[in-house]
Image (cartoon, rainbow over all chains, first blue to last red; front, top):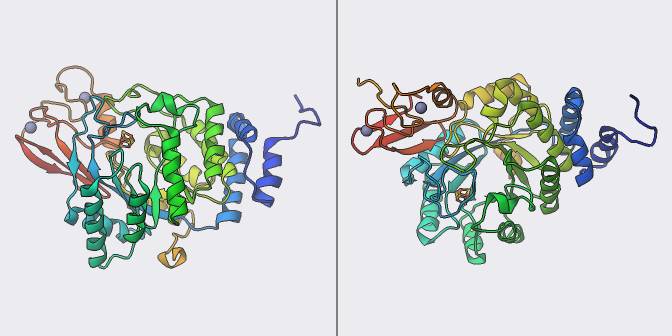
Amino acid sequence: MTAAPEQIDVLDEAREQVLERGVGLTEAQVLKVLELPEDRIPELLALAHEVRERWCGPEVEVEGIVSLKTGGCPEDCHFCSQSGQFPSPVRSAWLDIPGLVRAARQTRDTGATEFCIVAAVRGPDKRLLSQVRDGIKAIRADGNDIQIACSLGMLTQEQVDELVAMGVHRYNHNLETARSHFPEVVTTHSWEERWDTLRMIRDAGMEVCCGGIIGMGETLAQRAEFAVQLAELEPDEVPLNFLIPNPGTPYENYPVVEGAEALRTVGAFRLALPRTILRFAGGRELTFGDLGAKQGMLGGINAIIVGNYLTNLGRPAQQDLDMLEELSMPIKALSQTL
Amino acid sequence: MTTAVYCAFCGKEEADGDHAFCRQRLSMIDPPRYCPECARRMVVQVTPDGWTARCSRHGETASAR
Ligand code: SF4
Ligand SMILES: [Zn+2]
Ligand SMILES: [Zn+2]
């Protein structure tokens, strides 16, 4: 069957609009991309890769993350093994300062330029902020010049200012999913509250890192909605996670996102966010395996988390570094980020 | 070396039921969560290149890396 002449193919449109002009796809266009038949995925990924090279360059940003405070969170994000509201086997734990310094050093040793300190909280209290402050001082005293990001939940203006004063250059706070789907996923706070924190971060001059999780029961239309809502925020970085169905959480029996669907999502998000750092985050091991990771890197992704995540394990950092070398993708250096 | 009586992923007895899925998760993306000797939930700390898991009765184990 041939398309009617007036029906313009979405990838042709994207080539002119996104690749040539740097204008991200609209919600309707993203949805069309998400609905592309499987045999067109290679074409989509090739275009997404071209877009990434044109608007972001060839470098890959490498990051390591660590959980400073694990588990026992009062919130009820249904995907999260760290919520204290579900019978998850994850127990509360605090990482001490020497452990944090070691984690930062391990991360720097991989060649990474980003180190993100994460805590499972609704928002930081005084104790957590002082732990972060002491931790950052100790990391610097260790002679480690890696850039430090934080993810500590929702913030007040005062806390935003404190983090800026500590030299935190980027803040992660995920919107997680489309606004219309969020109430299904979280009931203890709203999408809008998260949005407010993100605005404060942006206004304070910190870089905004905001992404989410694919595979939480959202429709394709909601996935498209999410992509353009992120684009509206103009984040510096979007981490893309794929659901890990964790025991004890309400989503423990959700299916893992299929590789082809995940690749379509990667390509579509790149076409919606041509200039953003698009990071492979959690769940890629389960969703893609080793082959898919490579396809993703050649399909619009330009950043990765190496090593382990917060409560789950990743593949060894060296395996990802070898992959980047094999793909002839240079790792972004610290000098390029200053 | 004590033999594992309990599954480190789901905490049920190894002899009871099928743990193929558990083993797959443990080999890919999960640190142990339950003590293999007593099935207590362990305090687990994941770091960029490893993990430690501590049982209040049987002490700490760590990843090989
Ligand atoms: S706020 Fe963060 S740590 Fe707490 S339940 Fe939600 S995702 Fe998990
Ligand atoms: Zn088991
Ligand atoms: Zn034990």
